[in-house]
Image 1 (spheres, one colour):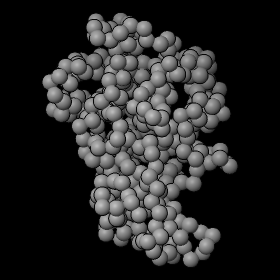
Image 2 (tube, one colour; image 1 turned 60 degrees about the horizontal axis):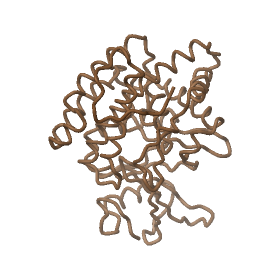
Image 3 (cartoon, one colour; image 1 turned 90 degrees about the vertical axis):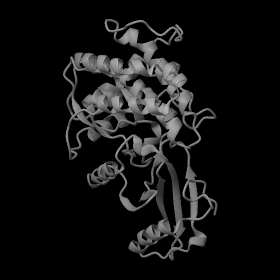
Image 4 (cartoon, one colour; image 1 turned 45 degrees about the horizontal axis):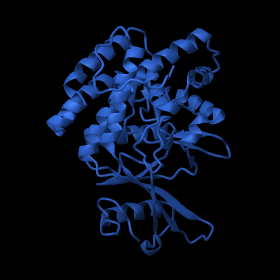
Length: 359
């Protein structure tokens, strides 16, 4: 049984993980034969390594499945792991995701959700998109413990400091890290001029974190490492930006903003989001939120651009984080003149003209 992941480099499960799996199995009345254990790597994760573990039971018709999450090296720089686990457990108790089954030093074991993980193309299906919008609105109503303060801006300021410490001088110059504090201040000031609905946001709404039960058509949102209170518009902006990605292609780090959702598609999603509680939104309400969401794509590009720079220095997952960051920053500078024309200063000379018309 070969397992390609840190902590299991010799191809065998650690004794600590075996104890956790044995404990989980015993609660179900199983006895694990580790020679019959199957470990299947699940691709597409960029923060952790994720695996499906299965084992047979005495009942020939029953095969157990759990999800094994091995924490990525250095990713604690992005969030507090203990807080993330508390969030995971709380969301689970709200019946919004998988249950936490066990923990060990390098990761945890979770309930395996028997549902289909969405693909990049699934996000563009109008029916599926409406289901995602409704589920996201429901997720946003979760009452989570802790402060309801928006953490987006301070988190990014903190990441600038970390990115600067990790980067070479050439890297810092290329990404204009010395200007980003001013950019974040500018964004925060501009975007807070309009009242914002602050909710518990997922903040990482890529297709791999959304599952669907193909029989019941119910949606489950998973993976809450980056979850926190933020403006709802930021979460929608994140989801729209993720439509430019396909993390299961031969070049998973390449983003195609030519397929960023057009105005009609964005309005349809926002309308589904607002109407999911039974309230029929006015055209003005839809357009206002659509406009707010577009502005928050700028914050989203900075957030994930900084994440990419830091990840390139701390994470060993096979993904070109630096090129990913480069594309996110490029989009920021390209879109800023269109979305914040009064606040826009000189666009960097190395950014080419000719961005796609995303309006």
